[in-house]
Image 1 (cartoon, one colour):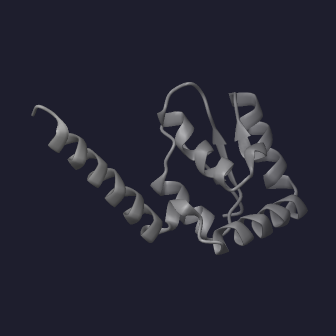
Image 2: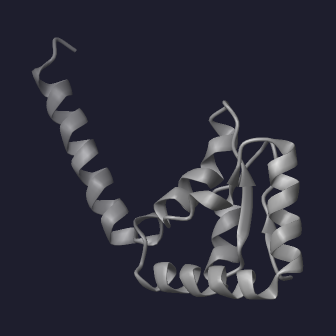
Image 3: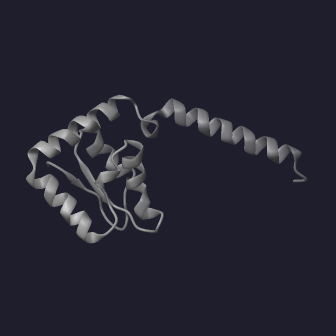
Length: 116
């Protein structure tokens, strides 16, 4: 595969990790629902909002442009590779664990001071 087209309207978080880890340029479509915003959030984190379409026509156009332009694909592959080598937070299990641990502690402390 040369590019990855995210499924719409059920954008994946987990399903996008694999193509990003092998540096495939990824096209997603974002609408109003939370489900359609998942893939877009990953691309925003990687600072590639130009790969996020907001309608069907722009989704198709992005896919066609990437499919036809090997130089453009290479540019995105290189950008994705650099970002993914930086261990983004959405892949950083230590960061996730520390954030979840802090959240659990906060919830437990709030429970202790509440009237139950």
